[in-house]
Length: 232
Image (tube, rainbow, N blue to C red; front, top):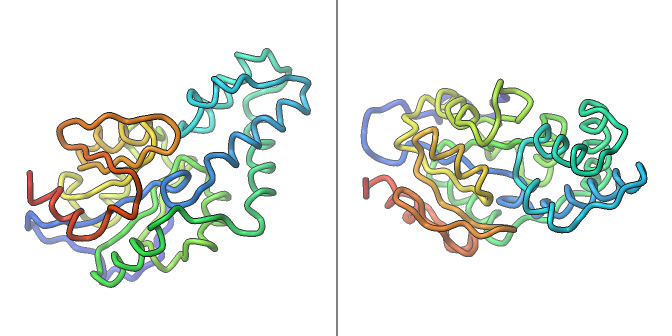
């Protein structure tokens, strides 16, 4: 877990106001979910296997170990989980070396959160080496801390990453808003007790109590995020 903003921005008051905002990375802030699938397709093609397009919805948004393990089992490829994890990260890094496209509304939302001095964390199932590369496009100074999938014992869909983010900024998870694009990420945030905004990227996500579904980050701003908490 890496912190990048002075502790003076961290809020520890006991009010019922929005205390922090946590954002997923791939498919939420940056348009990279397709990059991961392309890396997986290429990796398995090199191994002599063709991936079924239907598997894409199964592996999207999940932790690397789960996605890679599923594809090894489904194809019968002769490669270990550790070897495939390294290979996929390398192929993904090649694709993001020249920068990554931001999702519509991402830059505006991050700038607005900074203007309001709302502690913001990037919480991703991607490994640290990937997050640090993508931060060049997002701006590391915009995040109070970043949590990578290989820095927690259990990553998404477990609550650990979001609980770590809340501890890192000294916030009550129930007073934090999370923005996610996959069912895996939504499950992690809700298990941590956070309020959730779902912006589906590949597979649909249904609304439910404590969860709001929107079509794009362009529909999300600070007043909107604050209503998630004040409406509790």
